[in-house]
Image 1 (cartoon, rainbow, N blue to C red):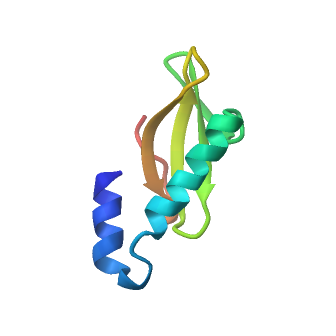
Image 2: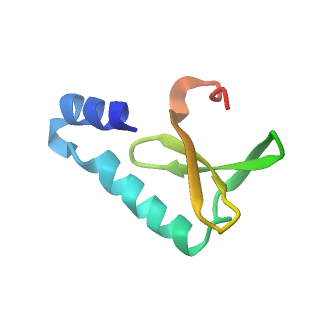
Length: 86
């Protein structure tokens, strides 16, 4: 996520905090409703979900921990045309 944050600040100066702001909003929503995202696949017995950050076109891939906490696996550009290796 740090890479995306740096890239966004460097390449989108008019909206340099947009990625961070959108990610923070999404994480707040996921804390309130952890199953909000769409089921993506099962990896090693864990259901991986994803949620789209529509303005920055990034997918957040996450799972719900045993204590209902969110575990972020990766953030991946929706335009890449393929999914991440999880």
